[in-house]
Length: 226
Image 1 (cartoon, rainbow, N blue to C red):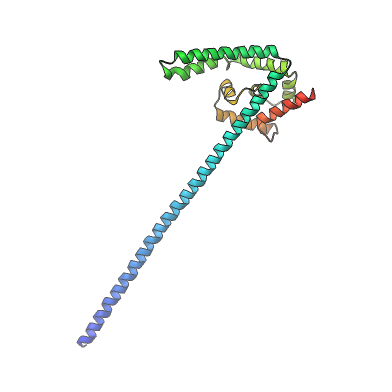
Image 2 (cartoon, rainbow, N blue to C red):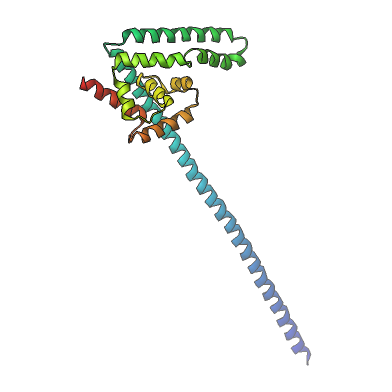
């Protein structure tokens, strides 16, 4: 083999080695790019999922706020209806006096807790538990409803005989126009649990609307039928 052939073979060998190296380098770069693309795709999907979840959360919160605002409006409407009833003024005055006493006690607690604000929440809770969250409140509410809307609650209970004592207490408080926050305090449960309870109760009654709207319409029908 002459020197030229040797040189040609050497050049071809080097060229083949370079081509092979370039090929494997391209494959490695392609593999890395695919891996990076896979990572970016996964991150993109995660971000997209998080974005939709955040949108769903925001939408859910907006719906809860709108529902609560509507419930407050309906509670105020029922409270106005109660005040306009020709009967039941004595019971309403007695219940109002009780609320005024509670307000006075809460004002005293607020002033006395100025030096120890960390005790304010506990003392407010104690006042509420010993006043409006006691059994006497439910008796006053029942008397107020019976005086203002004679036979209304009894008719409602007869229509839905499966209602428990707690269900009846909740309905009576709502029919008096007691706000959702106040009902939460009186019934001794947080707003989330109270909201779920009202939703379940409305469904069990066969109502396609909120419990507050359902009761408001019931009271309006009662007033029209007189």
